[in-house]
Length: 68
Image (cartoon, rainbow, N blue to C red; front, top):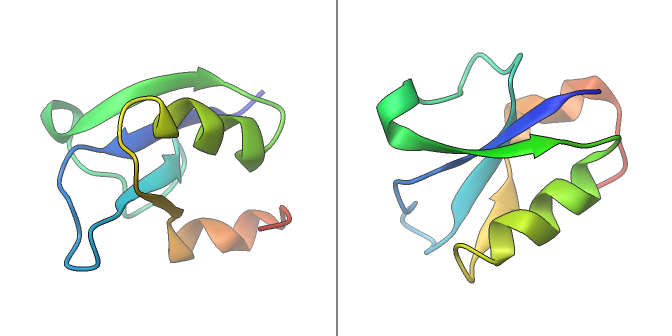
């Protein structure tokens, strides 16, 4: 199952991006929080929202073909 992370750095729109481990835009290890392994993006976002109220999916991760 894919591993997911959330960026600790808030984007200008106030959200924190959720990334798959394979993402080329994934921040360095000291600037992300490991969320766990999930079968899809949706449960990873739910987990991230327990840490940060505003989260969004990384645009680069769309190439993995999951529903938004």
